Image 1 (cartoon, one colour):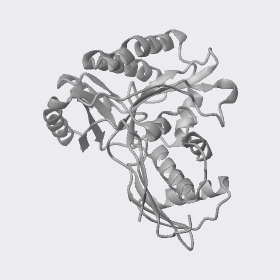
Image 2 (cartoon, rainbow, N blue to C red; image 1 turned 120 degrees about the vertical axis):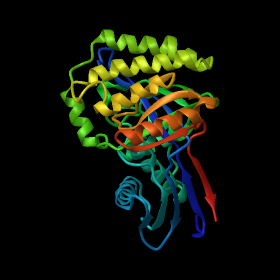
Image 3 (tube, rainbow, N blue to C red; image 1 turned 180 degrees about the horizontal axis):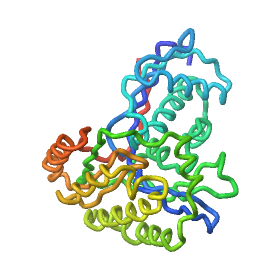
Image 4 (cartoon, helix red, strand yellow; image 1 turned 90 degrees about the vertical axis):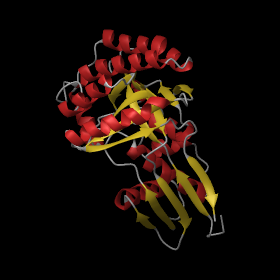
Length: 323
């Protein structure tokens, strides 16, 4: 593009990570993930060719590292201005790392006519180390399931997307981010996984059966009760496994208490997104306002924090040229 006045605008969804599928690996694949895109919070950036590399707005230090990573992977000149007007809070379980990485990489690829796929960008930017959930949500939105990583080629290969469906428009998530320690960084997450033994194949089998024969059919039939039961049970199984490297089924006792409160006020399904502290409850649209009010009151009386209603993002990131 020769016209330096052209800008690339990118707005990403956030994501809720609902769980991993196989932490045993005896079939030759590991991980696999369940996740859904939500409409906010967002990463919003604009990129424009410039005389030098400059980054303004939010998360400038991280974005600088990401831009340099892109330019080391692709042979284009690093003359660009990136302005980040909104960012997803880091390390709270809402997918900030993948969404910011892909927002920066996609904007730069568009601006400098680098013809690569979103999956290729994710690998180049160091994402999809375990699951491709965040990348699939960036690209397509909706509810997604990936098929895990081949144990023989864990690095450099993108996990295959095996299921993607729009999330029901009449459902909502109550998302709470308690005022607690943030979730694990990439290095801390790697250390935690390295300390864990294989999950029992029986437990993996339960997760697979719940996913295939309860969660996905319920999603297709818009059966919120069965969907919520499946999500909650999957979270309980996975949480029991991760209790070996965290304080219990969830990363903090306060998170467990808040999840129980969401159950008490009628959420159909509950869980912790990734390593937290973000947690969620699934409710019907008409129940969301009252449920949110109760969750906010609960947080104010306990650990503090924020809560909001989110609906699904079923389209993925917005990417466009602006003048």
